[in-house]
Image (tube, rainbow, N blue to C red):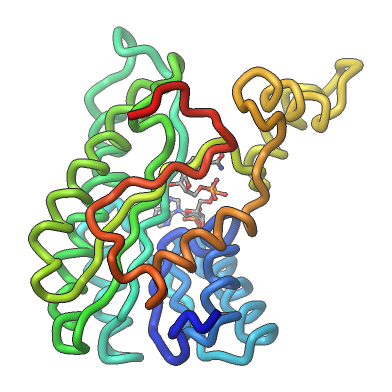
Length: 264
Ligand code: NDP
């Protein structure tokens, strides 16, 4: 299947590890040039070099904190300078939280709002004009199943990812006249290095291994009874970026091994 991604320029926030890195590989394997953005520039460079060496496309590493207006502006400027803009923006940078509503301070709410919502607002607003000049584009938001099916221990994550869903839908309506397709992907359990680290910490000094812990989580939450690999969820993002998905607009797609309990 020709995905029509050769020589497209794709910006992936949080592209230095985990799901973002898998998306970077997936897009570069289809011939796209990839911008990897993350706070830790060294790790972003390693990821960008790894992608370039494996797929032979151009890559750029950008050290930027997308939870800040300055970080977003730097990323937009560097993409403009290196490639004259982008065809694809994947708003992927994000992280889980752990709190109760009664205990979490305003500052914590604000940080997650900036990371999960304002980054998408600022980067979408900043990169859409160049996409329009290039004839169109794709913006994908990596939200989470928690955007519609909350986990009790992370109310701030649930709420800000849910807001991202509505932002994505609204942006889709505004940008489709310019041939920019905006969609959201809600993932379930995906086995990133961060999950392995957490599982290792939680099982240290017990008679269980990190793999036992991960299997327990999968058994409890996912009818498929396993985690996804970053690569298998990345394939879905790559498809949505492609010319094979040209009628997919303003939607939310679940890639969750059946974890979503309702049908809407
Ligand atoms: P990881 O923790 O493995 O990676 C997060 C990436 O985002 C890193 O590259 C990190 O680099 C970057 N990042 C974090 N904060 C910022 C910031 N402020 N500015 C720029 N970059 C940042 O995450 P995952 O791969 O697990 O998750 C990726 C996305 O998928 C997230 O939005 C997450 O909510 C979502 N998701 C994940 C699921 C899972 O099971 N793994 C399930 C559902 C959704 P650096 O630290 O250098 O900034």
